[in-house]
Length: 349
Ligand SMILES: NC(=O)c1ccc[n+]([C@@H]2O[C@H](COP(=O)([O-])OP(=O)(O)OC[C@H]3O[C@@H](n4cnc5c(N)ncnc54)[C@H](OP(=O)(O)O)[C@@H]3O)[C@@H](O)[C@H]2O)c1
Image 1 (tube, rainbow, N blue to C red):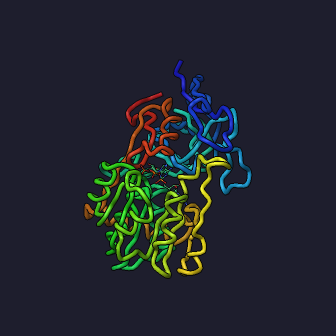
Image 2: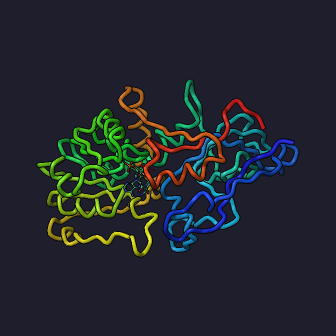
């Protein structure tokens, strides 16, 4: 009898660094076509996304914009899969579907709401839904275009530049005629972002004093900071950004595993006043129903067609490796957009 694998949360981790022991990988019999109720679909998972925001879903917090995972229940997140069997007129067997709440299971049955069919023309790959056209790419677009309204000739600084969001910030900013200064956590990542078009890039882990490193990389200053890391690096940026600077406050990954004792307290907040800095905090999910989403798809599709866009994926194979795949993000062990390859398109249950 075919079986499926599930990844569940064992216990919530309010602060500090979660470990793989906080997750459980288990097996159970697979649902069958015959067991589908009217209106249900049987989905085999192809890819799942690992994203830093999922750290907040491990905390048990109830005051976040996104619900926490519950102990004893499967994790979930963005995913893409194939319809193995359908008892709904909405999706046919073989269709590729995507959703923001795929359970971390190799296969599952569900009602059809929450899933959309993704057309797969020509050589299109299902993983692109999580990659170049995925949520992190749109996040880059919203931050630099919708909120910071960047202009040609301006200079932007971006942290975690080789990651899922960062690599798109670098390329969209270059495509719009900006000068790009980028940081990343290894020399290999630094080379990658330079190859993507960054004008200057440095390894923040070996650069020493952040303020000195930023001033060296941007002797004439910079207009926009796309923040992915928060903490001490953001603190240094506040001192260095030009007057009237804008910050896309996208994320603060350096603080996600912090405890009360290790959380970094920003010291240079007064520069927000004296340098008249605008900080745009945002959550990308608020923008899917705005014109920005179609504008993003249009711009990215055009750049892809012209071969002016690359997107580096970092695939971990096997759902059983997903807990470590997620935890790697908080140590910079991913290189590019981290996805879990769960099953391949040609497999069957
Ligand atoms: N606001 C929104 O709606 C939204 C949406 C998506 C993502 N985000 C945020 O955007 C940021 C980037 O997300 P992503 O999906 O693109 O992840 P990612 O960059 O693909 O992966 C996380 C990267 O963060 C860096 N990092 C990890 N720990 C760090 C630390 N202590 N200090 C500095 N850097 C650290 C590492 O890169 P290095 O090796 O370069 O250090 C790591 O590879 C995150 O803060 C995330 O929460 C926000």
